[in-house]
Amino acid sequence: MSVVRIPTVLRAATGGQREVTVGGETVAEVLESLYAEHPAVRQQLEGSDGGLHRFVNIYLNDEDVRLLEWLETPVGPEDTLTILPAMAGGR
Amino acid sequence: MSQTYQELLAKAREHVPEIEVDELSRLLDDADGPLLVDVREQAEWDEGHIPGAVHVPRGFLESRIAGVAGRDREIVISCQSGTRSLLAARTLQDMGYESVRSLHGGFTRWKQGGRQVRVPTRLSDPQRSRYSRHILLPEVGEAGQLKLLESKVLLIGAGGLGSPAALYLAAAGVGTIGLVDDDVVDASNLQRQVIHTTERVGTPKGESAKATIQALNPDVDVRVHELRVNRHNVLDVIDGYDVIVDGADNFPTRYLMNDAALITRTPLVHASILRFEGHASVFMPYEGPCYRCLFPEPPPPDLAPSCGEAGVLGVLCGVMGNIQATEAVKLLLGIGDTLAGRLLVYDALGMTFTELRLRRDPACPACGEGGKPELRDYDAWCAGVGRHAAVAAQA
Image (cartoon, rainbow over all chains, first blue to last red; front, side, top):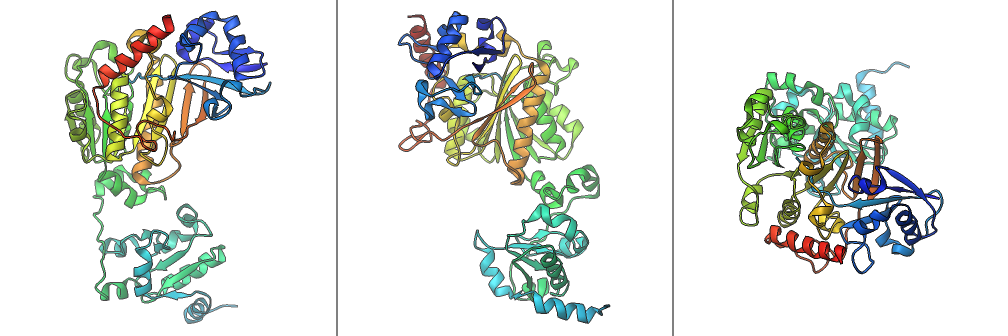
């Protein structure tokens, strides 16, 4: 089981949970497990082509998975995935 | 065994190599040259010193040197005539500094050769008192404080992030603070925008912030830019500033500031906030990643609510704005490690700080190979990208 950190804009879709612990051995599998528990998250992360939106970054621990093996990046039980959407607020 | 002054000096001369002013002069032009440490007293330093020298009075040498140079750093010690520097260099050798030389003939011989001398602008007595806690820090000192007083920082927005950042930068004695804001103070701002006051509701934010800053620190020259930056005015607005602190509340301004910072090669201190969460980083043009390396495209509006729509914890602004102020001060002083190449994510509810690694994207449309920062109509661009993404999301 891996921990997925949920950013503030997605917490409405996870019932307010800041972290969700789900199974899966790759980034794609972990995301699928997350969508299975919280279906509304999928709509916010994926485009119509089923790919992740370009304005959403996913980090395995501190590294951008785009620089690893993208959705096929292996995820271990001690790993944390961080979902990071762009935010613009300053006021 | 007791030793006379002459014996101590002779012994130091045996162990400490000396360097002539001609050679030092050549080496100081080199970026990889030695660090020149002037060990004279404050009054001697104030009358003039060799440009580029660092001042560590002899009496503080042992306690302060570690904050100035590591043991493997090549060091030249100078004093007035070249004797105190021999003894000081000997002390550093005893402390494990391996490459230490003493300037033969000292500052006097340097000056006799007609070489350039820097006479420092001095802090006034009230300034010495006001900034005493900074001056005590070896990493800042009087020279650093003078540097801050000569520095210019531009704040985009005098709001949630800009308020605390402006207050602390002003208190720190940043000599010129520019404020870009075209809004007026609203009662709903006061929960977090601590630079404004209840009685100034309805007045322009720039003017309100200026009044607070001037009451806090009269050393600061406040320049109010009562406008919204756009592609036509941005380069004029940021001209002459050393660091930009981005506290904007919208994506078009964020991308505009990123591209303008790249064009002018100005460091950009970034932070953004929403609800209980904050992001912060430092974008060093062409040295580290830029905002577009991190987020090449803005999200559609429904996935990126503003604080006005989604709310924000007031004190979160204080934390993130002051992280920005911290990074700005470090950049101005050239000390420490900034957030360049790192994104700090703060979750106030969990009280966690998470660091994510950011890297330059070789394919970045702004700073990558073949990329070019280009000022454009960002409102239309963000709306276009956002609409495209929103349609894709609904399809």
